Image (cartoon, rainbow, N blue to C red; front, side):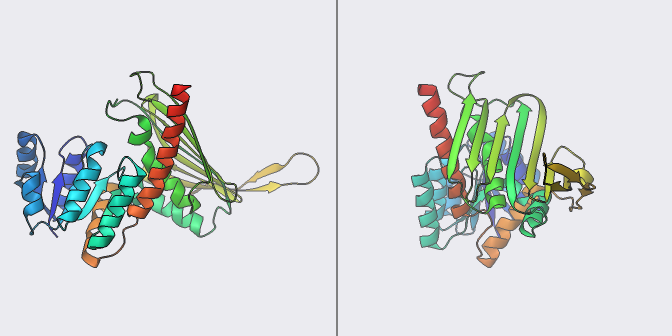
Length: 321
């Protein structure tokens, strides 16, 4: 495998490092030549231009760590050049563009994967396995908080910057697209760019999903609470590895009067300590090698994109009211 990473910014540097650690990095691209040269030199790769990467048949895949508004054009160009593509979230800014990328990948037989990073977090993989094994019973609701103070963005709001990860996880947990999406939010630091957003989803069967995202919060919180019929689970990524995922069994005693909760002993779930980004990059390389469908393929990315688009429509309607 020979991968070119496009974008050496805040996140792109991590992607460059991960592919280098996996022995697959061959080229680095950035509009700032000094940044590209620095990253290339640090990881034993070549600093190349975008056009050079597209024209070089020896480079078989590209990883796009670029601003969201560039994703469609760059991913489409790479697919047309015969490259496999890993693109950061979101896959595109509109469902129509996402559909076009999916069709182009299928027509060319290329792998198209989207960087919904937390699908590759060992604790989330363990949580999903618990849900699929029935350890929580039927899901009642899930609530995901992704909160911090800064880093503020001007090119996108917190819905598009933070929430794709959480939406992706909730769709996987419930195993379906929501039948209803609502959203509210507020733009406080910069007019027209929401700093905090609440997204509410109703899934087939009546389960509820909630995402609260903010970069105007006084402390960092990355916590996913999943409440089922017989147990709840909490994934708290700010905790040490031995406490990142905890299962809380319980039962409801019903009859005369109010229901009574009978709590069991919490159980810390053992998960392997590993870096989600490196696992994501390794998953992409395996899909390219085996010509297999990645976990977060274009179809999964489109389901997430549709939720984000519906949520943004709610925000726009509220702002225009």
